[in-house]
Image: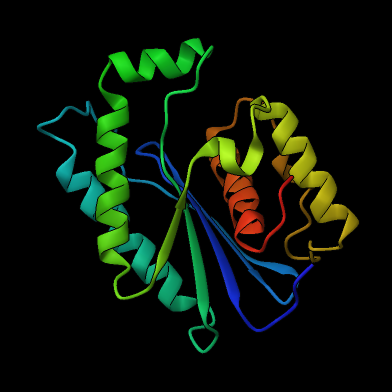
Length: 181
């Protein structure tokens, strides 16, 4: 496990919640979900305003956390997973292009910081959501990455979208550190 002075940031983008995790000196120091208030019916014509609000909140959040440390940012980029009915449904409903657009807005907002983009399969293989969350929790517990103010037990809650984005963001940050769960 790397314990250098770099702040490793993982971002799991989504319009229903964008998870952000920051790992600094071997500890999880940032764990948050950015949301836009209200329910949105997203389409190719209505995604821009919420995307820019999410990106703005993300930039402000990252500016608040240890700005003196260099940051390595890793962002999950969407892909259609073969054999996944949910993934194919998202693609046919037009959600994948809109999520790709959100990723572009986030990358642009974070300039001049270099952002590494990865596909889900790169950092978690073909693991199901629950299996990857259990591995992330096991890894972070084994390496004592949790603190008293951020104990970790609360994150294994099936069906809680907010926690899913945050846990995935931890996995993405770990991947940015060179750890594959």
